[in-house]
Image (cartoon, rainbow, N blue to C red; front, top):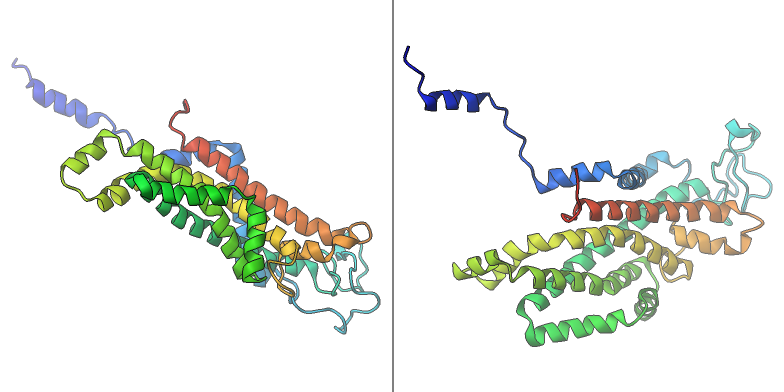
Length: 319
């Protein structure tokens, strides 16, 4: 019998072999990220916080700006009243307030929910601005070098010479108290760290062979910088940005605590702590819940940032 054509037989065998799924940076990163328990816990905390901020009007039991003084069913000593939950034994005749009332007789639970919106807006916006400006300055300094590099990085060194919170306080003092000025100050003091990260990534990337090949083909400096170098420099910026959101939330709370951030009656966690700082022992619920909210928010972003750093690090040996 005549033997089958070897090429035909090989083609049949190849067609029976299952194709392995293609690998990509995003797919591998998500796979390693979901294997990290700390990162998963951080994502859960952040998702809960985002959902609370989105559905705050639906979850809030009262208007966060409305005082309960004179409202139906509210009698007696209202400011700083302790939490009242009917399922936990509070009298049915008493109005229900899950986290009690603040010093102005406003519902603490509703103010805490709306405060998550302020913290997330400040955190994401300030870090986005800092990453955009800082990475642009760092890439230009690292790519062109020379006097441009010296001027940009010396300015960054001057900003880094001051403690970030102290510099933010000085900026807000000059611009005036307010949440927008606090957001701008937090973004400005965060720019140097992203500029240094971007510059270091560009210095490590611009000498690679594929950059030399692209330059030999006639590509412009702008195309090389933004089309070929930038995508390979995003990893440390993403990790630092995730960690930076938690720091921005903490700095916003600190500025509001000393009266330079969110102004009354706007609900903000740092401002809520400031209002009740003298009632720690007599009304601990007024400082416990806002402090807990700040702690879990910062913890969530720190856990996610650490997990992303591990997932995006190609030097780790993963099985």
